[in-house]
Length: 470
Image 1 (cartoon, rainbow, N blue to C red):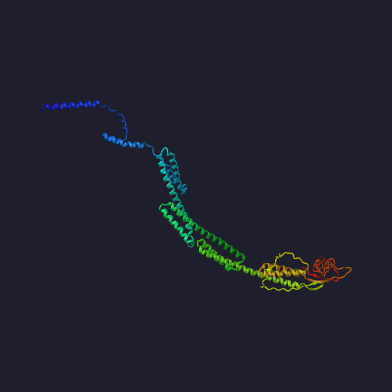
Image 2: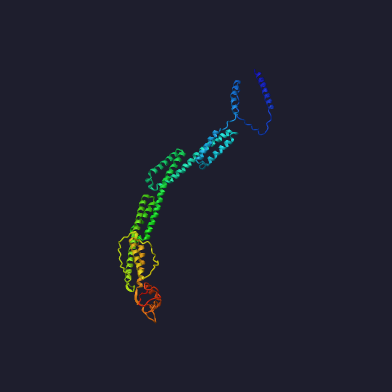
């Protein structure tokens, strides 16, 4: 047994060595280069060996898929395009081209591009059309959202302006409440993201508030006009002299006007209206009172002028004059005047005489008669309370009377028969006891026109009135 074991091991050793040698000889020498990177392929799991029946079934299942893939995708219909066009048009009506230009422009752009690709690449066209839909919808909602906010701001401003003055909320309460109801509805719709309805309600609220603001504006304009009117009344009163004749009424008008303006600026319309109405009454009262005072002053002036003219005329009428060769009074006239007598319109003077109007005269007696006429006209104007005209007529009568008085009779002269130095108007005027100046002869002629037909022909025995010089 001990001899057999070594023999067996030797045989095994030889076999192992021979196998190792053969393996070493067949292996190639290693090359010191970077080994090439293996090409990565799609992960492929080792396919299990399939049975023939299973392979045939799968082939049958795959055949319909190949047929579907090979068929071209169906083009977008005109109805689908029309739907997007309507959305874009709807967005435009919402003014999306102004309030959301980006989405609106992109929607139009993508729609047009989808149309151009519809025949060549329907799949891409469908994607662009779907994008255009979303952009048009966003443009529509964003536009209404922006417009709703814009209207809300407009309404907020109007509400702030209107609520400054409580008169609108009281005098137009129902209209104001309706406007606020619409405003609150707009806010509720906005919170629910119903922007189109929100905009509609805010817009309705703005319309109602604008109507109220127009009423307020009219009230303010009327108030401003009334303030200017009262100011003009006060200025008129001051110009007339109300500070002297109606100081209480004038000061009250000024005080109430100042209060009314202050209340107006503080949006207190009701109290402002009350103050301004009182200021107007006070200003008118000041004017009326002043006019009455001025009228009374004029009346007294006219009365004084008439009495003065009457007195002067009566004095002038009492002067002696020569008439038909006899010395007598110039005019039989006695001045009388009743202050409270009224006359009819038919007795009113028909012609106003200027204070510088020339009065045709033929004799001093006729001048006095003319003065009497003017004095009567002065009385009539006085009775009509036309005191200015009364003063004017009285002044004319006064000037005539004064003129006559100024040329009253100085003396009388009887024409003498003197063969050596015959009397004539020239020589009579030259006498030292007459005028001592021959150039005053026309005074004698004018005073005695009734007796002197021709100033170159006078006769002995004629008696001439010699007027006084001015």
